Length: 204
Image 1 (cartoon, helix red, strand yellow):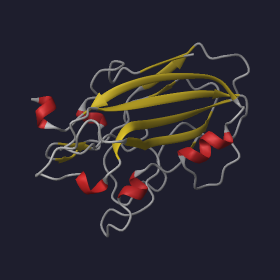
Image 2 (cartoon, rainbow, N blue to C red):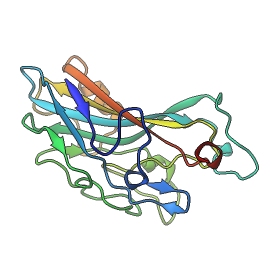
Image 3 (tube, rainbow, N blue to C red):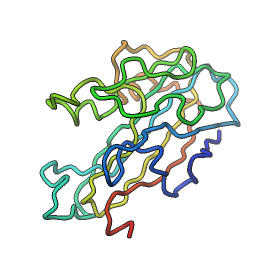
């Protein structure tokens, strides 16, 4: 199975159009275009995840003018998109069709392919307790890495072909739930990734 995007080249920078943050604040936050082919026989649905494995693990270092987050700081995953039950005849997702703009407190019913369900992304936890932004963030919300991070972040779009029509998950679910539910149901996986940074030292 093959996955690609017309919005960015594999392993190259993602344009700010498809990010949640840019140097002066919020960005357009549109989802990028994705398309796939060479689907294995027996595919009954697809699941899509977007994960940044380069998220800092020391929150106190994020967003500070007085220090730069070192490249060697231990990193963790930050989930930007979780979508399941994508119909087996779907072969592309148009740019901006699932997200177009930043929605404070999260999108209630993010658009997507007919019948697909979208889970929580990790901005749900990041904005928890924030009176203006806190809420359940579902669907796609793009890159917004710390401006003081010396590591360029990578964003992996992972598409899974599954042998079940629907995953047995409740209405409110996470990427971790998806990994558990699709265990032993994956026929194939395809990956494309882009990069993004807001650090002037890296972009200048």
